[in-house]
Length: 65
Image (tube, rainbow, N blue to C red):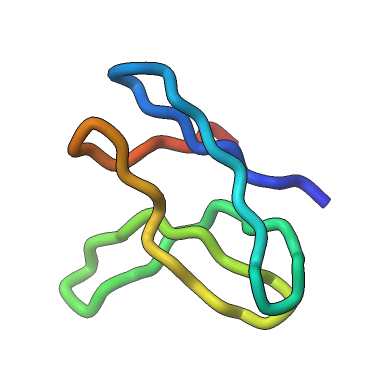
C-alpha cells in the first residue's frame, strides 16, 4: 500500500496518516463539490472514510502523487 505523505510548503513539516478504524494507510484523493470545485482529501480505501487533508502554518498541506 502507498501511504500519502502531506508536506507543508512553508516549514517542511510532513505527516503520514492511517485510519483509526481499520489501520489502513490513508491515500490522497479529491472530493468534487456541487459547484464543480475540488477539495483535496485523505481517504481510506478499506472503509471509505474521508477527512480533509491536514493543515500546517494556516495552509493546506500538499501531497505529491
